[in-house]
Image (cartoon, rainbow, N blue to C red; front, side):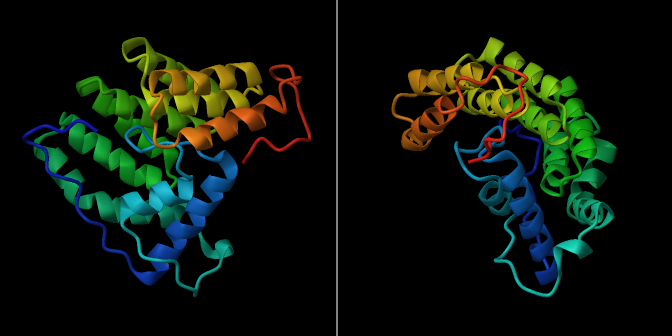
Length: 229
């Protein structure tokens, strides 16, 4: 994402073994739910598990806690703890778009999507950024709001028609939230048209090939075929 001279870099996370396990569990759940959907400034396609773990700096998963012990309250508490230094800085610089976006990232990583949406929207109100807007779209998607997710991705593409991650995620949401197979394929094909040397070209081509297996399904229809890859 674009930085400003007055904005500090995101502080390195300091994770306990239990926190790392919680994050790893939640990342795996996100990956299972949405396949390859990615953040605004990430390289596509990357699994949600890999993207979130890499962005947080969490170590490898360690045993000692089950999925049943992970609660939304615990995850939100983790996000608040990690974001605390940035929240303190926001008291004196409340409209800093970089700080606001980074706080949103912490809540996003902790699956506290309503809070992530709140801070992403505040960041965008201060300064529009296609990467932050793409993050907002992914947060809407994970909140179960496919329509607003698509709206945000399309807003990005009006300004930057070749934005690879907005195009990629638009395809994922059209497929998984709307069963709009042709729309998904069109978005992914546009990624390759705009970025013919994309480093993940082979994976995107594989997504297109698999989506075409569902091409006879009308938008909005239900299917027993899995959309996740």
